[in-house]
Length: 166
Image (cartoon, one colour):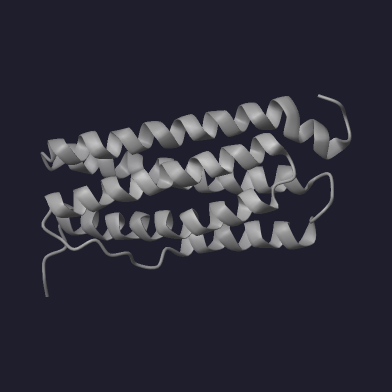
């Protein structure tokens, strides 16, 4: 049995986040179609494009470690996607629909921020300078998306969910 090293854990976590990003690309497209608020729809569409670039950076990290890009099922992202689907079904047409979608998107962002922060720290420890740069770029994008979603929630979406004017 192969030794379980930090390099092994890095690779396994990289596969996890690769799977998550690929799944989120599809889910963001669905959420954009379901969003009632045009600003939220645009935010989802923009992040879906950004996510495609994040997948490309992950491909580069796989190349740096000499591994084929491949995902492994990420139960955490499957759960978040399942919750988003429930919201789309159960709250369709309601004032709270977009608030629920935004919350699900932020749950995914927080998961990704955690994963990318961990991968970046491990890459630093392992002396993978190029991987650190690639992972940090994605970490910064994920953080900016989370901040944008928070601003959108606080300025428009949550008020609309309660029937208040922004």
